[in-house]
Amino acid sequence: MIKLDNIEISYDRVLLENGSMQIPDKTLTLITGLSGTGKSTLLYRVGMISDQCDYEYEINGKAIDLRDEKCKSQYRRLHFGYVMQDASLYEQYDVLGNLKLYASFAGKEKSEEAYLHLLSLVHLQVPMHQSIETLSGGERQRLAIACALCKDPEVLILDEPTSALDKKNETIVLEVLKQLAHEEGKCIVMASHSALAKEYADQIYSIKEKTLICEKQYQGTSITWKDDKQKLSLSFFTNYIRYFFQKYKSLNVMMITAMILCMMASTLSLGFIDAHAKSSYEALERLTDKQLFITDDKGQMYMNGELPVMKDMEKLKLEDGDNLYPYHKMMISVNGLWVSVVPYFDGQDFSDKMLRKMDLGDNQGVYFSHQLYVDMKDMAFVDNRFDASGVVFDIQDGEDMGHPFEKSFLVKGVLDKNIHCPYLKDEKSFIYMYYKEIDALYQKYSLQKDTRGYILCSNNLQSLMKNKDVAKALGFGVNEGQVNLDALNTLAHTTQNLRFLVLGGFLIVFILMLSALQINYFYKRKREFALLSVNGLAHRDLHKLSLMEIVGKIMLSLIISMIVSGIVWMALSVSGLMKLEIDGIAQLIFYVSLFVIVVLVTMIYSVIFFRKNQPENILRN
Image (tube, rainbow, N blue to C red; front, side, top):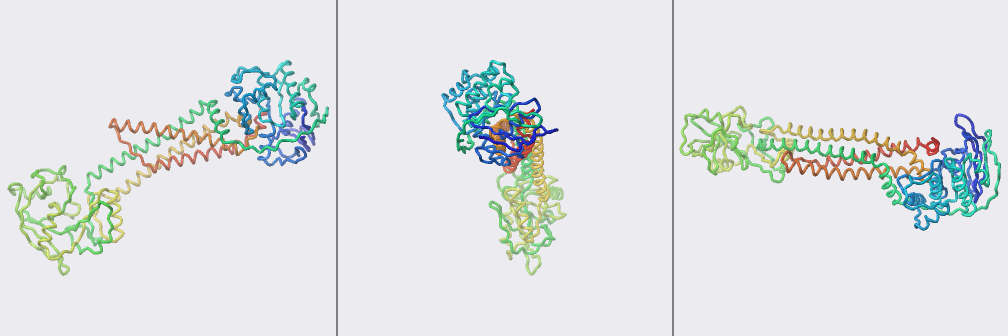
């Protein structure tokens, strides 16, 4: 038995004051009254659909806390069945699909024979896979009742179930309801203004002049309600999402397409940015020697300056593949002009930097700077060789001590006029000599083996930048040579900032787009969500359903966008137009951010939507 006390109904005016009603089991109870008197509102109170909680509610003597949404949802899902005014059927399902859906609300699975039995109870004989759209009004209403019975409820709540039916079909429906009350033990509560309904009703309540009047009373027979605490299964959510994707197929495809385009645009944009950055980086690597000249004096970082003996060089820990070479001061006299000798190393290529190539063999030799070549233009070479006097220097008692030598050198070529040595200050005439030859002369003629500087050769610019920072932190003087590493660092930071700026822009666009689509999506589905809530899905279940839907869409979008982006990537690479480069970390951050934003936007909007749109308000309109 259901009992309600202290019922108050008011909108812009008072409709009902201090009403009370008792609804016995195994009874067909009718709520009647003129239009606008509040009979549907009263029905929603009986069915625990209303969000109002200013009245008292009892089931079999047990008081129900109407403020406990979880408790109310549990009763609606497991003990109440509902047939709303416009029929509670889902158009995308066939007859059997609707029956299965309603059974799943209560966590039940039935055989096809059981569903056929329920159809027979409502005197409905239609094919199980017949489309809902092909059913007549009377058939649809009886199917809605059968669907409500699939939950095995103790109570059936019906709002104007015969309002759109002719007298013949109305009589059939009312006979079915009477039979369900008396033979199947259902407590049936119906709101209707039908005169014929009064003839079939066991008990009648009418609302007149703000008063709830029991015009016809029936004792009924009490039954014991089942103690069912079945929870919604994961399969309910997955099956529901799959079926309803078809109903809103165009909108879902639009959302997924928008997400795919956003993801692809971000991936390809990052690829283009990283490809351009890598291309610039590689070009810079090709143009530079990736060397540092390291001294013990921060104020003197040139080879032709006064350099002290290096100390504590062992503190500098090198990256794998990097090499450290001692610098030995040497000068050579060419046609009476003394010039500095600068070492070059394995892997240092002058082939595209020469004005004139002389010796084309594989032996190492010396390269003249352009200015030196101009200064000694009258000098004759024999077999591309020249004899010269030279001096190697070491430090004795704090002073430079020179040790002369005579040697014949092989000339490999003359450097282009725009090639200068960054390790010499204000000196354009110089000679590049292979470092092993310099070292051999130093070992042969020098008396002291101290060094006044080191040349550090790195495999790549990143390693070079790291070595520079370490050397400076240790207090050494560092000559960066041909490349401005600070500018390179700035370029790297600018590229990184550009990545995040692009990703941030896409995220903002995505948030705005998703918000607009979600608002439209929820609005289109508000009646559907209202029916789900009526049938016992609590707010947390509706939030879960919304999140599972959007997470499924974003995962599908991610997979498709990765596949399509991969195809575009391969096509560009194979065609030779561009080889895209993807920063995996930046892309991962973007996808994680995208996922979090999608979840947050969906959660926030679903909370706002379900609080603002109560089932009672939606169903009344």
